[in-house]
Length: 381
Image (spheres, rainbow, N blue to C red):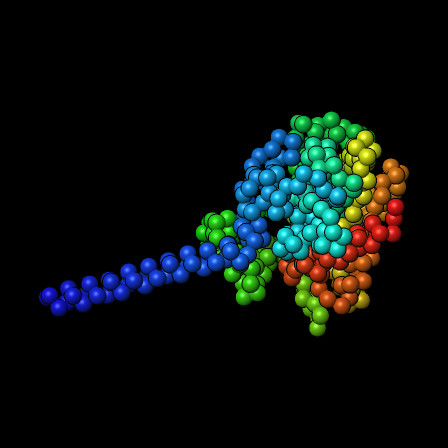
């Protein structure tokens, strides 16, 4: 009996030693990851409610700065302030690979990134009036994303009482529900992964490696629903991308009265931005950011996808119409704009500029955006 007890104790001791070694190794890996990597690239920050912006990042969480933006610090002044949504924030890339950071690298001086996912033109205006002016920039660059910025205008004007004055401008009042992004369901080990994404740099680093791509592609496919034509995959020697054309994720249907309302409101918001810029002696430039499918549109058309997928053709045509309309609005209000589509469209012929399953650019795509803006700044006054 004593021999059996001794053997059992030895097994328990070995298991305990193994567990302690595992915990120590994980903690050591986490400590090393926090030394080697920038936490802002890997940790999810804390989101808090804001009565004007709807949401914001709590300062100093997830590696963000005092104001809750994706910068190493909040400077006293900045030469350029970039305001936008997740396309300006730099989603799917590291902070130093976002287009505002690359623009700073190219030009020198201070470029402050004031982008956050879920923001739209009304939030851009608010940030411009309240925070950007405190940095006394010479130039403010607003990134307008055709994928969902009209959606954001409608939602904020219609469902945030602080912006209700915009809701009836231009006869834009619409009795309709808000645009809502479908929630992802069936996420493998969802709660554990969410906790780790907020607290572990090591986990976030490992999960972003290519070996986890199959998990993301599976979850992406699950979000697209049951219809096969919701997903379009394109692959050749230089490209591997997937497009989600699920109507639940499409927010540029100009037949939708809510989008029509947003397009009635948007010129007033743009005019108010220009007024702030003139009052504060700032130069306002609107960067027109196309969607992933629009950037690949010419390539997909050559491959016969436009004829094969009517939903794709419709999405591209709708965006073309919206682009022409907004360019006209900006001209009417004497607002400078830089069209990013031609440069992105030219570069994507030779390489992927977007993540496989994500609508956001990869680091190469963000660099093309920064280089295009820089050329515009150098060629204009």
